[in-house]
Length: 286
Length: 286
DNA sequence: TCAAAAACATCGATAGAGTTGATGAATGCT
DNA sequence: AGCATTCATCAACTCTATCGATGTTTTTGA
Image 1 (cartoon, rainbow over the protein chains, first blue to last red):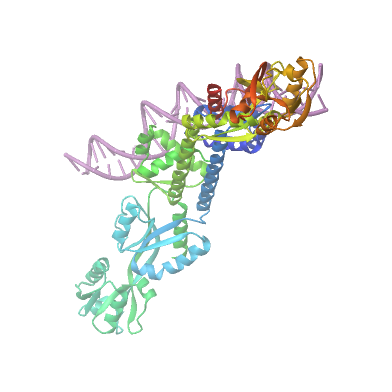
Image 2 (image 1 turned 90 degrees about the vertical axis):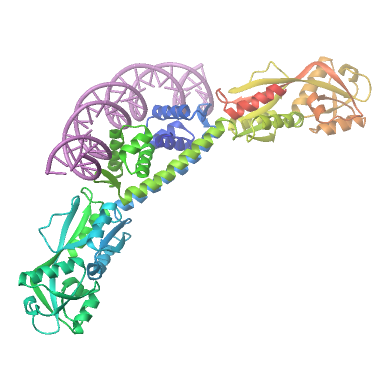
């Protein structure tokens, strides 16, 4: 395999038509350049040079190789520059899996902030529930997963690093002024996704009753509409209210029942620069 | 400056997604590959990898660089192949400066033979008198000069290597049967180029007279036509008669007055392969 | 739950390549 | 003829690359 250094030396010799001049340009000693040329000839098995008078002259083969060498060196140079752009975060990409309500409530400003801090850094988003988000993280399909859990004491998923972003309060949605869960033990309930439903059941359990769930839907706008129409009451995360707030329902914060939101990453620290940049923005905005 | 070996290793790791597999493909030990990757990261200053589970994963920057590396390696490969083609003489070029009569008498078969031995090897010809041919050789404008001299004892031009090709007999052109120069001491003469004219003068001097030169022309066809028309007699090189032979003139060989024809090369041996190939053909055909 | 296997990083030793300064040979200019 | 320039060769030193052995972490299988 050819050596880039030798090709660079060859190109310099071809440019200057002289070993000494090439050595001066590359800050090498003259014998070093001479040696490299000899090695290059031996390695390629081709005759590249010929002594002519007190100088040397490139053969046809030498000229051809020098030309190719110049092209190749240019490519290497440009690859190097491209890489520098990535280091400086003026290029690159972060792929993020986010759960629905955080997507609408958080990501617009995150995206704007990221774009202003690092123009050229691309942000790809996927709307995914936490378990699938973690799976995608493991599979390398995303770099960051924004996930939540209600129970802070449950163990971190193995191999995953969690960065706490915010505690999202839970709100009770009603059409009247009864602002605690216990006051609605005899009402019908509207529940959200599997995890939110499990959370609801646990909250009710604290008050000593089991809720009668009349409707189940993932759609946060739908939940509010159902409550507004008098179909029942519901609990809903605060982030969901940031995205859409139905004026016909009353929202009362349920104390001591926050949803914990995290940014999850996979792989050993340090994080790749694009990932680290996104985490910075997430923690500063949350 | 990036190192080709490291880029090749990076590309292999990107292909296999594993250090161990890449090491196996490249016939390296695993620690060696690991070390190279670490050096590559340090040299570029970019984070290219991240440990993930029991394997490693390339970052965005690493993937980009691996892609560029593949392109670059392809270029190097193709340059290497191109060079091999030159070594095998299936490509390349020989530039030759030839004097007129050798051009028409010798070069057609030389060209054909060269093409059959080395298809793809290009032959460029320039019609030049010997002094200019030598100058072009020195200047690197041609690789070989086909030249002649009458006086074998004159020193070789400095720095030039001469390979003897053939001795070209001189012929006396007349319209009658007087077949020696001495018999034409009172006739008028037609002379060729400067060197041929000097040679003619010397031949006559051996016979003890100075020729009366009535016409001078470089054109070998013209010389024969002038002689045929009775304007005078002439001496002409054998090679010139090979190219064109006027049926109305008689040609008598002048013994002991051959023109010596050489292939001249410049620079230290060994000659570049294309040059050597042409010399082979020249010596075998002459 | 525990043990074995797999994958990568680190360490120490050795062989090889690269670099330099000095010297020699050949060429071209004055 | 003498001198300056240019490139090749040589010997010595420094640095890098490579390998095998070892340690650490993760994953898989019993």
